Length: 347
Ligand SMILES: [Zn+2]
Image 1: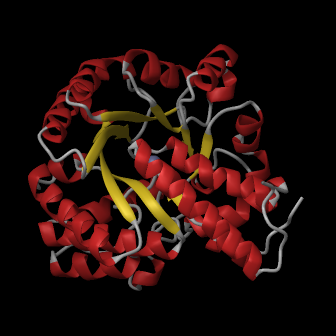
Image 2: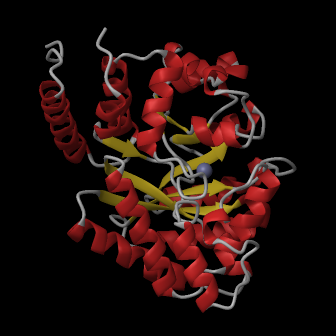
């Protein structure tokens, strides 16, 4: 077993499939946009903006973040900065969420959001060493009408830029079966499908996502192992989970990372990979996550390289892109091992 240094783990090439541009926003940027857009911050010092200790506080601050985003330029800026920070964490490929549900309620049309976000994707591909596609998340509490509208909007966009549809926000009190029609519409349009499920809600919501809504990926899936038959199905169908251990810790789903089901999910054969969720607001990058998870579970470098490669398999990139990413990641693994004086990977 090879043990890697923190710096080595931070530098591993990574895929991220569960990060929200709104939650990735930098506090200083939100402070500036809030000022320009006449939104009052709840703190005097922007450095204190993201110091929250409960889910309710998190959601309050999330509201301030969204209220501060009004023009296409605002969305371009937070999306582009999200990709810059992701590239800095070693992420080479990402499928990233944007969630227009909240700002739509504040009067900003989804077309304005997408104008800024899609331009940021194009710019980031040209400027940065990261390749990004977007996933439109609808807001579950806004109901099936909103979900269908978002599916129709997503269907009309360039599939190379907007690859899929997802759903986020709270699970409690939401009947997930009502979204089946919106997901069917998304599927007919060739959009990939995922859903936040089994985070603060039961494993039943994961079952609805994969069986009723045609999802081929699950975001969080924290409660999956509660249902052994469903776990078998998820393992057999190689349906990936985009797992976010530190995000789950911060909202107190677990008392510490050691108690998180990520390691047990992988031992069970689940294609579970690592993500940061809201790296700006949670002040914790995917590079931090790799170190934290490796230490909590005593993972070897080999296991962390496998976690990284599982991100490629879990992605929706075309097969030729996946093969190229895998070759690139393996070459980078070898270079890093040689730089840190570690033995080469087993053939
Ligand atoms: Zn999320």
